[in-house]
Image 1 (cartoon, rainbow, N blue to C red):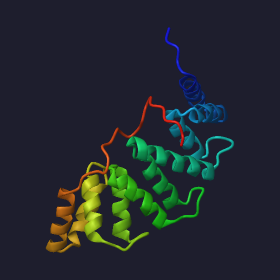
Image 2: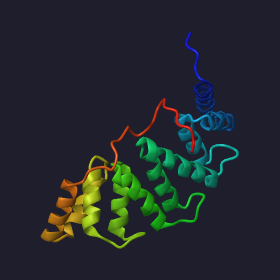
Image 3: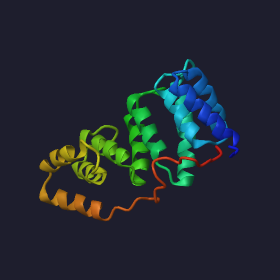
Length: 196
């Protein structure tokens, strides 16, 4: 019989409660495991709060956790938290809606190679939301995000508006792109990082 660390047991109990639609218990278990540094619990907790499932759901609390996890992600090579924070600011969940702040967080995720952040940043450039409209940058980031379902269409739409010189500039940016950090994956399943 394998003995699990306390955070793992709390996480499993939280998952069972969540599967049974007992979001109050799930939230409490995830919060306890998250406080012990379980990143899986941190992710589930923020998810439960951010979509309003738990009785004490609090978007502003979820934003605080996202900020804390983005610092941990910077240290450990993760990237999902920056993208999630971008979404929070883009949608105005628990914070005032702020396109410039969304762009800031999407840039951090995009620079690390997160396709969702790259596509979101491309859309911000294409629409001129939170920064100056820039087809070269929009095309660059849409191209780098490539595998997402809607990206090819948006990339083609953007390219159709560009001059040959702009396409060449964008292609150079694409060809020379190197993510800031090697990705450890989209999650840190099973790893424990203590909050800073």
